[in-house]
Every structure is written in structure tokens, then in C-alpha cells.
Length: 462
Image (spheres, rainbow, N blue to C red):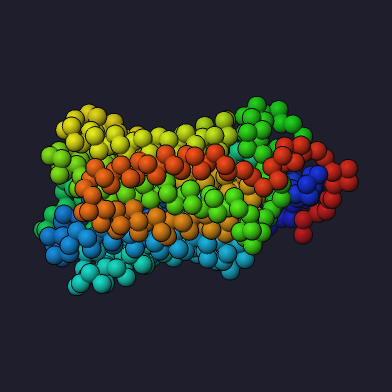
């Protein structure tokens, strides 16, 4: 395979549509980085695999950490809540730094790798729980947030015309990358080997993040694939359908402009509710299954199936949203997520292992699908140029949902029992579906009628 010399200037032109949105045309993916753009789906996917175990497998290590360090279960659940808090907190500032050019994608990934390994080292050797709060909760959370923000937003930049399925696939790595570690923590790790296991997992995950990040590269601002003319109807029915159901934003919104639209904060609140349900399920399913009398292997299997379906569902739901529209898909996902919470409780209360596994998978599907939907929807509504910052604002709702889903969720279980907690989670999910009905892109009716500018602007690359 031959590669293009990316140091050679390549001619491009900029055209605008009737809404004033600018598209940069003429440069191919190989012109820009010397390789096909599908590699910028593969490498972000690998990076997401590397950070997944910190959230989705962490509670599987609860029993061993409790016995090894004498930390209470409450501390362990709050550790996860603090991790989620910092993972979400870094999204917006990381987006600002990325888009200003002060934090290149490769540097963000390297910092993420350092945070990942520090988190596992602190779990292995922390002399007290405060050190774990800093090492795992803060440093690992910040590292994961840098990786997450960089990987998810990278895909939308390289696939602006059909971002749903690609974003979903990359987002899926954040879940099913944890599957082997769930079994490792529940079936193999014990008091005799926990330090070695945790260090091994930290090194493997950090290596995956760093190796993937080495190949990251951003396209130029306003870039649009040379083979897809944004001002004409495409010959590819997939692109025609995707753009019809999810038209591009009428213009590139800055974070300040996006923050002035009510829809951004409606999206923020909707994600807060649904992400809180997802984190509640991750944190509570293992202890709930054990309390209901299911064997440890069954609970680990249920959690692994939840992670697999959570990850796979992100890719599938992205593809579905390309075909049927982001908002319509989100409404259905919220209904599924809310209903599944009732099913998880009743299946456990009945002692039905097959039903418990099924409801766990359905819950995982709904909990995972929300994230790529909101990531792609943010770009659809506000454009790709500032998507890292704009999605960072939406994603910042996880600051609260992480603490509510994990820490406050444990308090609700203590006060109301598992039945009351799962009923509350299910009701919030159904209410989120109602809220999703009212999500509308700013200026979208005009965006459906894109026509060529009579005098497109052209110039050569420097």
C-alpha cells in the first residue's frame, strides 16, 4: 500500500451552504495523514478498551479490596463515584484545550495512560483509603476522561457525514473491554495475589491507551470527505438516508453559543438521568445478585453479559440512529432502560436466573446506547468543529450522575431496599423518554434545505 506524502500541500476549496456553514473540500484522508480514515475508528476503539475496566469491572473487585484493605463497601462505592466525577469533569476543559491546539490528541492519550496505571497502583498499594481516592478516584478518573473525550470526538471529525455507527462502535469499547477483567477480579483475584493482578491490569490497560494514542491525528477544521459533496445529493443511499434523518448542524456553534440554547441543557439533564441509571446498575447489580442468592459465577456472568451488550449496543444503536434519526432512537432507548430496571429487580426477587441474565443484558443495552446517541446528537445539533467542548458540556452531567448512581444509590438501597431503589431508577428512565420527545436542533428546519452557494469560495492549501 502506498502512502501520500502528507508534507506536500494539497489543494482544497471551501464552500458554504445557504445557512452559512463552511465545508472544506478536496483533501482525502490519505492526503492529511497518509492512511485511510477507518484507522481513526480502530485506534480510538483500542484506546477506549484500555480505560473500560476502571468503571465496568471495578465493583467486581469489591470483595477482595474490602478484605485486603479493610475498606467499607460504602467507601468502595464512593470511590467509583469519585472516579466518574473526575472522568466527567475533565471532558469540557479537555475539549477546550484540544480545540485550541494546546493539547494535541497524542499528548491527551499519553496523559490518560499515566492516569490509568496510577489508578491501579493506588488500589494495589494504598496505605489508606484517602490515597485510593486521590490515586484511583482523581488521577485515574482524569486520565480516563482525557481518553474518552479524545476518542469519541475524534470519530465525529473524521466521519461528519455518517457518524452514528462509527461513534457507537468506538464508544462500545468503553464497556466490553472490561469483560475479561470482570472474570479475573471475581474468579481469580484473592488476598494472595491481588497486588500483582492489579498492577498487571494497570500496565496492560495503560499500554493499550498509549499505543493507540500514538497514531491519533485530527483533520483540519471544517473538513468534509472529498468523495461526499455536502451541497448535492449523494449516490450512496446510506449517506442520503443518514443526512436526511440527521441533517448537519446549520452552522458551527461555539461553546458560548451552544450554551445559550435551551436544548443543550435539556440534553444535559436527560443524560444526567439516564447515565445515573446506568451507573446505578453497574454499581448495584453484583451485590444485589449475591443478596438474591445467585452464585458468584452467575453474578459475574450477568455483569459480563451486561458489559458485552452495553458495548455492542452502542455500535448497533449508532447504526440504527443513522437510519431512523437520533431523537427517535433516544426515546426508545430511554423506555427500554427504564423498563429494564423493574425487570432486574423482579427477576432477582423471583430467583429466576435466566430472567435475571436477560434483564441484565437489556439494562446494559439501554445504559450503553445513550452515550453514542448524545455524542452524535451534539455534533448534529451544534457542528463538529467545537464538538469536544460542546459534548463536554453535555457530558458534564455525569459529574452528578456518577455520584448519584453509585454513592447516593447505595444510600437509597439502605433506606428503601433494592425494590424501592430499582423502582425509582426505572421511573426516572421512563420520565427521560418523555423529556427526549422535546429535543429539537436549533435552526433545524432550514438545515433540511441545503442548496449550493451561488459563489463558493475556493483557495489552495498553504
